[in-house]
Length: 60
Figure 1: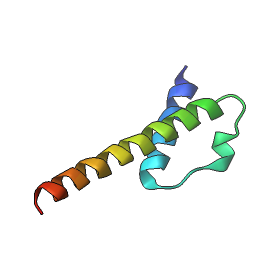
Figure 2 (figure 1 turned 180 degrees about the vertical axis):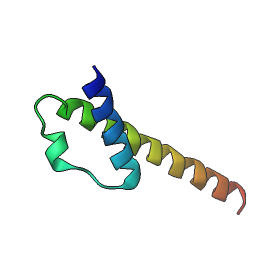
Figure 3 (figure 1 turned 90 degrees about the vertical axis):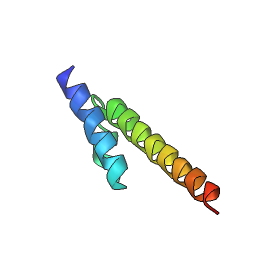
């Protein structure tokens, strides 16, 4: 379980940094957790940009 959480966290951190570790994402044991963390991180960035756009549109 600990390895899964670490892989998820690493994937999320990589997504927020804008770089994906192809080797980690292909790992047969922790790859799915890494990819899920990466996806969640990318969704978080998308939502952040969406909120910024809404703020900017209100101020125009």
